[in-house]
Image (cartoon, helix red, strand yellow):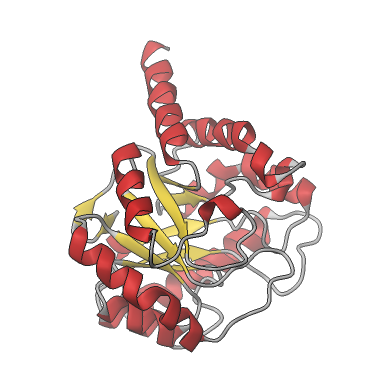
Length: 262
């Protein structure tokens, strides 16, 4: 996959979560204009390959803010990051107007938790700016029964929409959407069978860092997250979107070393 002119292949890379929201479920990920550059610098030193900026919380029970507020939150931080650091930046949004603003400011990728389905113009705008995109499965209603058929069907339709809009095939990855329209049992089923997404022929991204599926408090879910990252390596996942860069980066290295010894 190509993001920001960089080619990612044959490895599992860390995407660092940098939240510009006051209400993201894990307080350790929240940043402001005053400390965002420090957080990005640390993430890069710790092994991040991509920075993912979020200006809208999507935690359970979140209250949506409009695209204009998203733009207000990410405009200055995004500009500062692109001026200071040579690293691809993803912006997490499902609003086409926010995506356009982000891409104009230099963002390299749009991470859409609604898989191009929330805003009819999203795919067109990503293509217009020759951006990369992460297409995630989501649904207004919780999945019922067998989960992989609806997930794969949704992603397949979204991929076709992306290609029809002119998005480069080499700039697309997919995300099964752990924590979205799925209960705890379904989240674990998806995580355990994540390799099934590979049949669509696109790189995969796993986003389950410190999520409630692991139980307990968000502050106590690091080990479960690292176990999921280790599994992601074995399943051929290309990106893990995480809060704790250093720990996940080291886990990936150890997992690959173990594979070499087998």
